[in-house]
Length: 185
Length: 281
Ligand code: SF4
Image: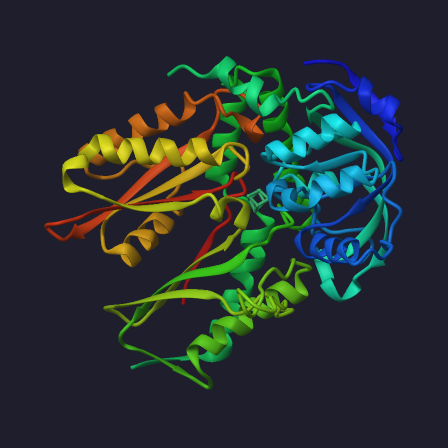
């Protein structure tokens, strides 16, 4: 395992370029949520040349559709969803300045190419650990598409949100590099 | 004829989905703890620790283990001497699902039309209910909130009878490898063999619901389960797909007679958040 790094969003390209696959990070500040339906709407706006409801430059998008919050909680269970479904929309967002994504699972070659070109990083959070992850989410605001319920875009204020750099801005990818070390076929 | 009120069906289904979403099975938790001890990858070990901590936290605070509280799947064994009164049986089940998801702060993840407008139904209904009529005057409910990170990685294939055991093994391993990190490993792999296309996928799902650690009663299938588990854990995929020796907690097989010309095989993958609950009324 590499170092543990505390980072504060929004992120600069310089910081992103310092992060390496295998680094553990604790994310602080703001992250925006978006999953399938929100990405589809963002894409429609981009295609029409209209402004997005958030300025994504330097931002982190977290692929999550949280559970509703119980009374007294900021948010319900809130772990990552499978990132690959957002792949078709992602290169465009990276081009517009998105600096990081948090999710789980494989990314397409196009996404990884765009991450290298524009300087962005892919963090993995532990899928199925949504109750634990929710502890690091301190405040939640709806930003757009409230009608989508769990799929709306929310602003999460996070403190020491635990994640691992799975794919860095040079294309190093833990999903490729790590399993062969433990494979014994 | 024994009479059961529809409201009792509703209440039972509601309690089962709440329980399944908050409390991981002791068998799953024990298995996670055992695997954590022997996991070779330090990062994999840490992932398993987080999962264990998560599951214990969810139970303690009665919050969802995972935010994908799934589509509600039920396997019902309906005693033929039972008469449900005061309402329609399927409606009573879906009302139980509705109450659990609305009152339990669970996520509503069902869209009404799968292809066109994909509008959320708002209450996680309808459920997917499989009913089997059995002798007796009781109803048994076995429920599972099925997350789609793992459901999406499931697969079905019509093998040729000549493909045999090796063909089955190859298909199972290929499916798990293709899934990689997506279904939140460590997973439980359900394998259905036999029947027809529809039957085999149902068998695979049913296979995932077996208690972790229990082997198939037929020694030939038990041996195949063990070989497959070993092979899956040698893929190196590991916890969260970040590398390691723990890719699956179990591989369970269910089989059924099939046609002379066929060898249907289905693989249903369930993530480590292998939620289930059962009750008899
Ligand atoms: S695959 Fe399972 S653990 Fe992972 S996000 Fe989906 S429901 Fe949760």
